[in-house]
Image (tube, rainbow, N blue to C red; front, side, top):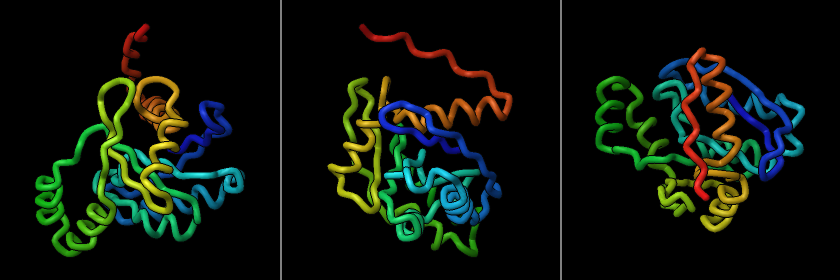
Length: 172
């Protein structure tokens, strides 16, 4: 699920694709989705909710950047448990665990303080940390999650038939 937003919060469009659960097609599917859309010329950066989609179908951030020539920024709310991730990769994907692990560790995460007090964990390809922070802050309207990612989650949950979570009360 992808949401194309003109910053900070004007929705230009919503795009959708599917990936194989635990497969290896995430990067290709995202490239097809963006390059095949009418929004490509207006895309200034790609925001991802982590690098794993569909279980352990991992996005190759370098390849995404090389093909799109736009900054790629990942955002996660919680620091990953790298020990558990590596263990799962070794156990469930013995033939390509090393390749998947390289994708997981290719770009270090850095903490980004938020107004809500809960830091985000961000990685960036094709831009500096300062630029990545600016992209996240510019696209965050309320709370601490960038609006395109928040909206993509809502739409994906609705398409899957999952009821929405109640919104946190606004802080005054």
